[in-house]
Every structure is written in structure tokens, then in C-alpha cells.
Length: 91
Image 1 (cartoon, rainbow, N blue to C red):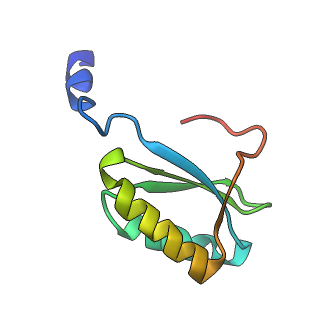
Image 2: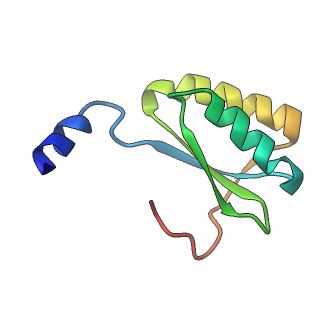
């Protein structure tokens, strides 16, 4: 089974890029929904709902589109990059 897994993770998209985002709490669900609607461009998880920090991971092959989406979210929702909150478990 491990051999199959190794074959599945080969290529340039094996390691996802990551950015932590500070958002307004009232927009967490909306931002998550919109980012995840773009299938294959990445995934989102909430790192800390009390201070409204999201983590967005995307494959290097989708970097250009992911950055355009993040730019749009910055304008539309005031999303901005931030550091990782303390105590976050890696995935």
C-alpha cells in the first residue's frame, strides 16, 4: 500500500504552498466556501476561529490563480496575510 501512496505524490504538486490569513470573523464561512468552490486550486481550514485566522494551501501549479484569488479577497473582504497562531497542529 505504501508503494501506491508514493506513486500518487510524485510531481511538482507534491508539496502545497501555504499562507495564513487574517479575516473578519463574519466572513469565515463565505471565504471558505468561495475558495473551496475553485476545485483543484487548494483547500482552506480554520486555524483559530476566535481571532479569525484561516490557512489556505494550494499546489504550486495553481500559484498564479491562487494569488489572484487572494488579491481579490484582500480587496473584497480585507483579507491579509498573518502569522500562524500558537498551538496549531500540522496536517
